[in-house]
Image 1 (cartoon, rainbow, N blue to C red):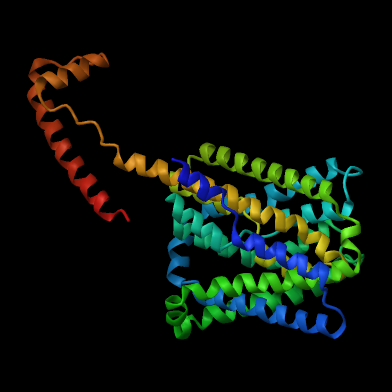
Image 2 (cartoon, helix red, strand yellow; image 1 turned 90 degrees about the vertical axis):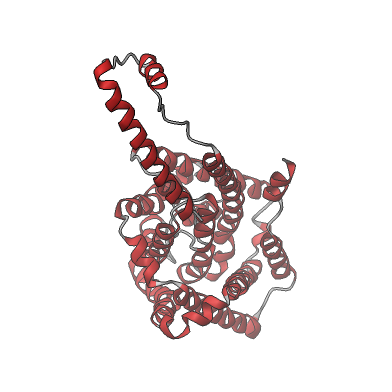
Length: 384
């Protein structure tokens, strides 16, 4: 029983790479012409990443998951209404108690779209509706390219220019993220087979792009004196607040799923897609939305939240998977077939059965038992 726990608590290697990248930027920050080349490489890597995401997205999968509009609305409400409300409330309560730039970063992470890869992976692991998760997460990212900058304008001061800065930022974000994504998706008929055969290609591009952008952002932040502003106490505070944000959102989503009467598979989609925030989208968006000297501080809460959400969701997905295996392996109680069994079942619930009706009840129960067996066999045969 200890092995699953150890696997869940094992540190994600990508976290170590992030820490190493921050350390490298702190010791050897890119300056001058080198910083310019790093920025160009990061932009190219991010554009390539979203191009591959678009090429990987199957149109058949979109059509399969698009019909569950009620679920998509709930995921959208969690991502762009619940999260920002929690972020605004929390940063308002912390005003005067914590670094305002870090609190702006905490609020910024609540305005971002959901993740794609991890949302789908955890949904599949937990036995949820994978097609709906794919559709919800992808839609969240596409909408977020336009909606996140608008939410930032409403809640944060972007370079002191308000709407003008936002229009320019939306153009930059659309050019860097949306255009490559759409281009990749429309080229899928020609390159989709190649991408599908090399599914492992996306992860190194994904993580390499993030590490490049983080290095660039923290190089500028180090030049601005980030480590004279952030201490161990600030990091622990961010960890605690991130955990609280995640706990509130997950608890609300679980309650909403029960109130809405969602099926188990759809409730899992709402829990995982509605509680994630995208590091892949958030880092380049921050570079387009905020001054370079502030980007390192502003994405620090997002980096902490990203690792925390992976840890918690991995534990929950494993738990749901174990619950599903127990449900599948538990045999259904047999239906009463004989007159004696039917009498006992009827007496247990206070249902009188006249003697004249008993032959018909026995025949109907036998027919019902036969059809139930056929249905169960078919369902078991279709299960993955």
